[in-house]
Image (tube, rainbow, N blue to C red; front, side):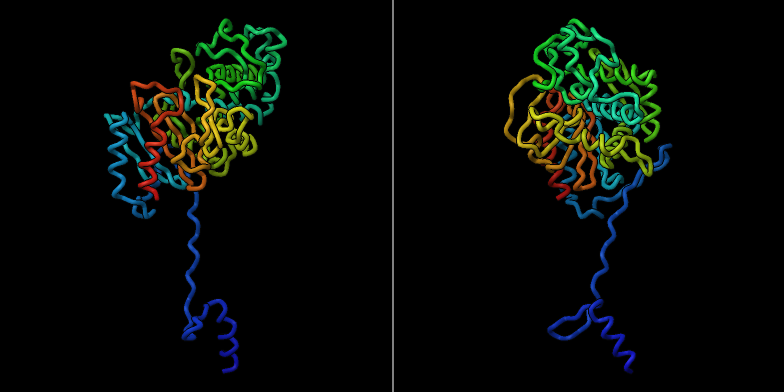
Length: 360
């Protein structure tokens, strides 16, 4: 009996006790955090998760779909912890159809540049002319030597942004590198830097070091003004999942976390909402392509403040939300064909209003 009493006293703090009636109650077992899931690289399997299991508002799903259809969307996906919660296709688009990333593909270039740096081929703080030679712009040698690869990553080259066609005659001086933020296609010179530094064809290097590692399917094609990446929706989602995991895929580090964290941190003191070709939410102000106006609010006020995004013309989107372990993909035509955009548009706040009604 004495032993039983001692056992009771030992278990009492663990089981818990109701002070009012002295009844023993078993405390609830903590629910384990769901593990992060990565799909197989051969595309034979991708786990799903139901909306009901997340306690989301199922009645708000159809209004979201209706809005996406109205806004010329071809595909839309939501991943939570890597698992597919929504995967929708419209206008005859399918899971095997390819579509252009437009400037959302800039983030692929940033990541590939970071990989080349971690392999010792380049240093983003070195001047671009160290890799491309002098005379790659129409600036004076002194002006040109101010431009580093980091300036290209952060859109602070100071080069003329009047033309999106990146040829030497268009790369003229406006300001010293690092003193002016302006969204321009000169970022694509990073492809040339990676190619020259690694002594490998850029696309081959990209395929071997990034695309094939995470099971993406896609290709670069020559657009009217620069190379544009094309892929199916799930391949875009794979890159988003890599970004959610700060450069890790399963147990392999594709891009080191230090560089990736730099990529999603304010890269200069002019436009706080811009990292290394990634757009950043939750900052006090932002600038947009094609102007020098500073808007005194966060990038997408309806979206979580920790969101970082790959944004391309005609509303190609990868939204990454670490606080929710969530990745959202949108591909399609311009949400408003009458108002062309190169990155941010009114679509972002509107679609997030609809998404919030589902997930909250």
